[in-house]
Image 1 (cartoon, one colour):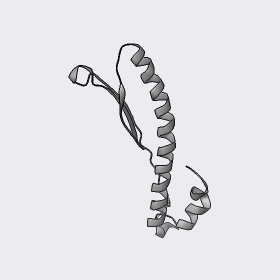
Image 2: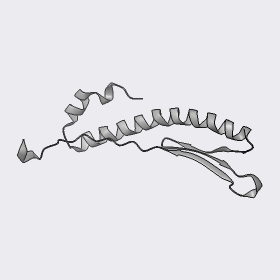
Image 3: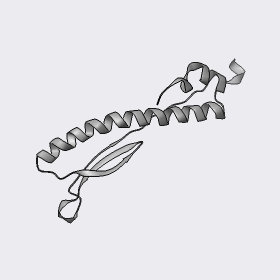
Length: 101
């Protein structure tokens, strides 16, 4: 969940371009990814229901913080795969070199 852990003050306290700000940025990326994949997954499930009504036999293959995938394995082989892969980028670094400050 994206919450006060990721406030501007929290990032300022971690410092610019530090291991602490990198860890906080990584934690933010994970939190955003979990929230987004939930939304994407819900909509993809609705799409899969429609595809299955049209004759496919898609079933959940995997659901992870950065990917949700459905696969139709009827007939002993993969006939169709529908997946959403999510990439979230974060970073907190100064725009200037230390000399330019």
